[in-house]
Image (cartoon, rainbow, N blue to C red):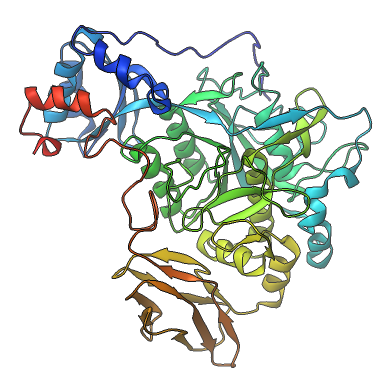
Length: 529
């Protein structure tokens, strides 16, 4: 189906020196965020007319159009460093340009790896045990469905692997721009994408092999991270858009970058496009041991109706010290420490990271979709939170996913409320629903000082504090949410809040000094006012 030359590598431009800007970059380069930028490359989001915008960009001196993503209405440009500020000012002056951001590096969220012995046993997969995967298969009478397509956007997948080849469909390689998304290993990539694919849907048919949470599933490998586990914003966005176009029901994304929200806007827009299309995007929270409520990490902090952000847990439902967390921006935890799964060459390895927790959740989501295809990401996220096993991990539900408990609710068509947890600001509103309700429904708030809810389920936050919402249907069945938190300062990237910890102010380039230069050239730009 595919063929790959293992010797190829993705390279990035490294020169970014104009006399006017070199000093600024030297200062900015001291920060971790500056290292995420790819020198001289920018993404231009245009509003409507791609032809006129491209014509305008191509006629701009010192600027080259390198790529065009029509689905995202984005053009990648490269700017001559000697005239960088002047060229960007001309682009930003274009009335059909919505915004411009630097093209940034994205990386796989792999924390560590360890070898395994020659003999691998299915019972070694503690993650499947604690999430009760096999019990869920037993009561459902199936292991998922090939009708559910999961896009694994990553370093590619060894599509010939003994535990994966029965699940594979055609994919794409955005690193080399061909139809061969083979997972090419390197010093920093032991087979990250192949490992993720195994957690989603390893088939379990090979003696000494492994099985994923949805052992019956279709997997589409989309490679945009290279053999060193790195890629760029432009290709990550294109991979998401191709997954949407090709009919993926779930996207597994175990990668990202810690950058200000302004720099990540095209990626946030892509997650929103997936959500609007009904695609459930499952994303890793990162491995910095930081609180994502006060740290900008994307795409995981892109809060949309159908997205799920995942923290890692260990064998005893503990949070590994390296796993990111957050009550507002991380939805659930899943096993991510010493996870046994596939790597290229019909081999297996234990890897650790929120990268490993994410595809397990993606596999569980795929299995739950197989039981009821009508369930949305919003509903599945709420269901997993309401039925999760309680854990001392600071996420929205303080819980770890339990596939059996979620499956039982679906098979019994038991009423459950969504959202199950939320963090809001005073004055914000949120719509609540009752899934599997019989007849009409009514809603009630536990503490009306914190918020009020109308007959349609529209909740309005009034004052700081915590409350809960209960839905009741005509049969008398009820379901009560977890904590609905209201606070005027919930941290960066949180729902309804500006980003925190990312800096950049109103500067769309994430570099205030560069914006200052541009404002000297084009003071009429909005961020210069």
